Length: 502
Image (tube, rainbow, N blue to C red; front, side, top):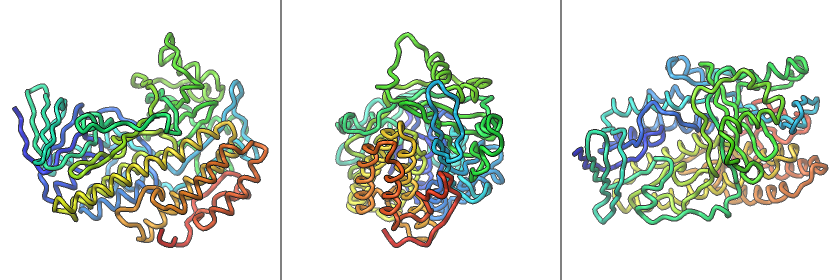
């Protein structure tokens, strides 16, 4: 039997759990990192954002992880780790498609939106090929002295006043770990949730409803090439960056498609579908459904005409889940374990890094049980608040898919919050316990709630008037010049003055 007696046991070796293990080891804690699968392995959650990069750099600097910092920018990643695949991400792109009709580029961009997240390629965000990135971080953890067991299936979790006892198996025999603290970074949370009797939020209370169908591909045509081939170079002259150097959101009826390009020629692509609009057909394979969806939207069919999947398709049921608790006196879950909503607007990497940073500071600053208990209860409230906030943002956007001009305005609440938080990070104003996307800012949340309530009720013909009202109301937070009709839905990178402390 393999046995561990440690301060901290971590279930799951995605980048979040592994980074926390490295931080804890750096702080002098004894750690065991337990993984059900093995690396390299396929994972989604591949698109970073400026907030991700700020938090990654802060973690690297604060905890002395010099090897980690180059991953915070595309230029330094490519220069330092050319063998770890990534992709260039200059921002976000959105294009609205109509059933049975080719996409039609319009001079007023009424069916397109691009928002830049960086001024140039060298300091841009990145698309993470998770199989390679996660495996590299695990290798650094092992190098730092973190005991790591893969192919370890935990079957029994016990908790008492002394801490945690985990019992499981792996191919070479039984495993037992005893730990004072437990972090579940496994992705579903069911092992820990079942042990503690933690329930799920009623799914009907969640605003987002989606299921997914996705894979990785080679041979995916560039969207910019298709636009220019159909409409000439004038179709993209107003774009603030090459639109393929982004996370592209191809919006369809009752869903959207993500397109994420890596530098090795592989493209991550998938549909997020409303299960009421797109119910599963029992007699239809995942491959057949993929082809049917593409053929419903001619321009998407053209983009994927020469594409070949390089791994089997994944097709899910409804994605949304959220536990009613994310932490307790001697345990915590990472956000993706406590809940999941949708890939819309790429929240996953940033949410994970916010949580890893927060837990790292708790481990560094609270060496006593009483101090940790208080901070972990605060962590619990913050993670649940962040999940509820992302649900509100995403659910509102989904409800506006049929009215793209309204959707473009509603999505500005996300970008306003993101840019505001980025400026606080850039100017040294942000604290380690600040919540993701102003989730803890009551005044902004109230403002957004009212705007979202109006958005879902605004008809397409009133979109311009709705946008004018939103522009006036978000002015105190709008550091990026958003909701400007003169931009015609094309927003270059703009930094604003240092915001006041939220």
